[in-house]
Each structure stands twice: as structure tokens, then as C-alpha cells.
Image (cartoon, rainbow, N blue to C red; front, side, top):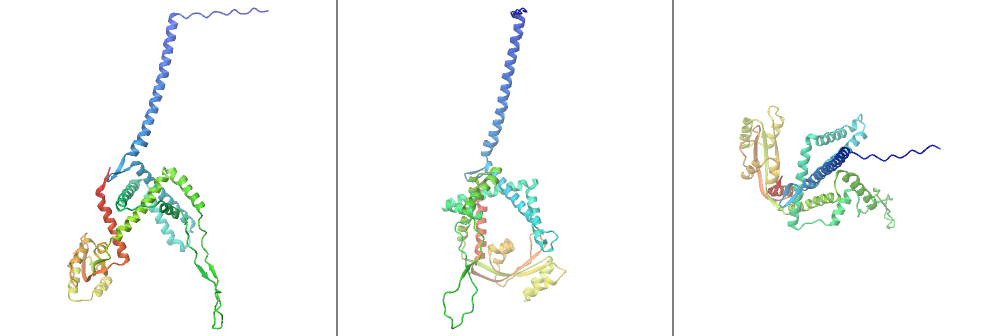
Length: 392
């Protein structure tokens, strides 16, 4: 049998070898510690950056309305929401464009309208207009906060059920649909010898199938998860924006209700030409008693001068300013009935205006006038509140 090999006892390391080994182990430990320290530092920097970007900056105010801050996170979410809405609208118009036959002459007008909308939306979504979307989003958030504060002062609120119903109707669900109006069926003519009995049968008119509550819930859930969530918008934010829109309607209604039922109004003739000498000639002819409409017809037929004329029916000062301008409106209310103004240069100096007051009295405002003045009063109130706004 072969002899077993004898195991050799390990040789002891020399002092020099032990010293080198210890140095290598110390270097290895230091290297590991260094790697761990660098890893901890990198993680710390990433966490710090995340906290600064997502927490600190998100809580910074981009504007302050009174004592209420509009924070960066809310502003950024509103910008993303605005862009999302524009992109959805752009996709809609592109689909409409694809559904039309470009060679069909009857579709050309609608096709041009669609193409105009597409160009406008593409322009709004281009990078060069990014700041404009941001400014519009911030203006909207500021207006909504001003409205919230005014609504609180006026004791105006939106009930939860009204908010929910507004959202439902936006998605096409009506929890209380109107009852279809029956249509009378055709019947033979009734003669004097017929016995009159309730024989007319009513047939309901065909109506679209109403959306069910279950279908609404599914649609709303899909909107939250597939449209809002991917762009970082929460349901709470979306509902707060809908609530702000309802509050705006209520505040506008109250301000409009404060518009008086009557107002001082004027009725006048208005001439405008681009030549001072012609304007003076028209003024002299008015003084001589020439018919106003005859002068208007003359201006329309004269190709040598740019000008026109019109008669403005009863208008209060605010609406007259919208039709002309503040200077001419003030002038109209300073003139006596039957008086005319001297030719007044326009703001650009290229046109000359003549107004002749034909009537003035305190009159009741019609529905359109009250609504227009109400919108004007709301805008004036909104402009006056800008002193409460501090933009960062």
C-alpha cells in the first residue's frame, strides 16, 4: 500500500509578513468604510434634493392673496391640468379632421374651422408659449382665491351635493332627468256627430339613452386614474377647482343683482372719418340741418375717404364706453340733447369722431344690459382686488 503523505505544519509568518498582512487588512477596512461613507453621502444628497424639490419648493408660495398663499405645488398642478385639457381638445379636433373628406366641397367651411382650432392649440402648446400658460394658470388661481375670500365675506358656500351634481352633469350623468314630452299620434278629423272621448294616444318622442349612475362612476374613476393621476393631479385638487368655478358663478350673480334696475342713458348718432377736413365739413352740415342718415349713406358710397356712421340706441355710460371709449362716452353725457361734438381725434390720431346726442333719459335696463353691466361690475371688483395680491 502506498504510504500516506505526512501533513506539513504551516510555517509561521515572519514579523515582516505579519506586519504587511495587518497593513493590507487595515487598508481593506478603510476602503470598505470609505465606500460606505460615499454611498451614505450620495443617498443623503439624493434625499436632500428630493426633499428640497418635492417638499420645500412645493411649499413655497408663488403668490399670496391676502393671507392665503398659492403654493408652487398647486401652481404646477394647475399648469399640467391646463396643458392636459389643451392636449385633449387638440386630439378631439384632429379626430374630427380625419373624419372629414378633404375633397368634399360641403365640408370645406367646417374643415377650415377645425384647422384653425388645431393651429391655435398647437401654438398655445409650443415651448415658446409655455410662460403664457403659466401666467394664465396663476391668474386663474389668484381669481379663484379672491372669489373664495369674497364668498366667505358674503356667506356664500357650495353644498357638497351641489358640487357632486355639477361633476355628474359635466360627465353627462343627470340624476333627475326630465320627463319626455309626449307627442300626439295622428287622428282622424272630428266631426260634430262624433262622440268626443279621450281617444288621443300619446307616443313619447325618442330620446337618447340616459347615462346610469354606475356608468358615471366608471367614467369618473377612469378619468381620475388615467387622465389626472398620470399628470400628478389629485381628486381633491380637481374637486376644489370645480367648487371654485361654482363659487365664482354665485359671487357673479350677487354682484349682478346689485346692479340698479335703471340708469341714465343716451341715444346718439356717430360719425367717424380718416380726414380732418372732411370731419369739419360733416360737422358743419349737421349744424345746417342735413339728415344724419343721408350723411351715413354718403360715407358708405364715397370711395375717396374711409369712414362710416351709425345710430346707437339707448345705452348707459358703461356700455357706451365698450362701444366707443371712455373719452367719447364722457363727452356724450356732457352734451345736451341735440348738440354735437367737435371732431375728436382718436387715440391713434388717424380717425376723427363726431357724436350727436339725440336723446337722454333715465331708463329701465333690459336683461342684456343688466347682464352686461353685471359682468362689468364683477370685472371692476376683480381688478380692484389686485392690490391684495403679492406675486413672487
